[in-house]
Length: 259
Image (tube, rainbow, N blue to C red; front, top):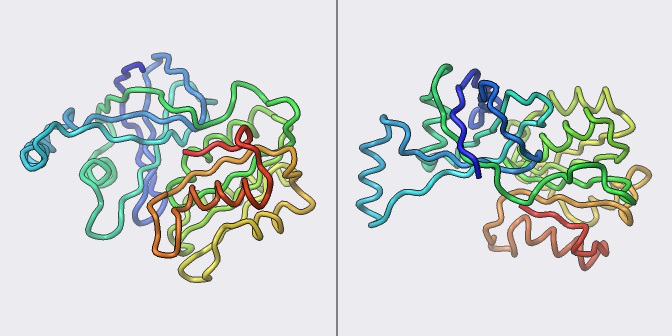
């Protein structure tokens, strides 16, 4: 992976707990595929020094870097975007809290990357008619870049995005999805699901209903990204949907991508 010193140009608020950081590469090449991630070492920020030393003393080992999915689409080569979402109230995370609440435009932010196999291929895959994006919470960030990239490049595949959040106020890029859907009505369909306020969840039945008449699941790639901690009622978001896609909807492993 390569190192790049970027300049923070803008912090765009997405929700009360999430913001998108636009990082200027200053003309330095940083090739990546939409959907990949970068890492950020917290040691570069002097303000975090006391907290880092305290945590490292408690843990007995050095503090590692933070991993952030790229939410940018790769169309603008001089800019990277990461969408940083804080954790639940009381546990925001030191580095995300710093980037969202304390960093200011003009700040130098060193990143390393890109990394990861999640994301689009280099070009439109042959024999594939659509992409199914199954996301929860901040897991939609890499898929945002993937969808924007494919639409901007004129790829022929359709995109169905099923996005699960606790409530509407938590949903990322809502206005952007509305604009993209309006500009590409035959290529993008977005369905929001709210687990807390509407008691809806992404699953096999919802996928079938929303794909009907729009996406041929037999020739579709599926991308799944979201929290994956086991829940009292069963597996985490990613594991649950991987199982649904394989055992209920008949997706073979080569048409499944998970983050």
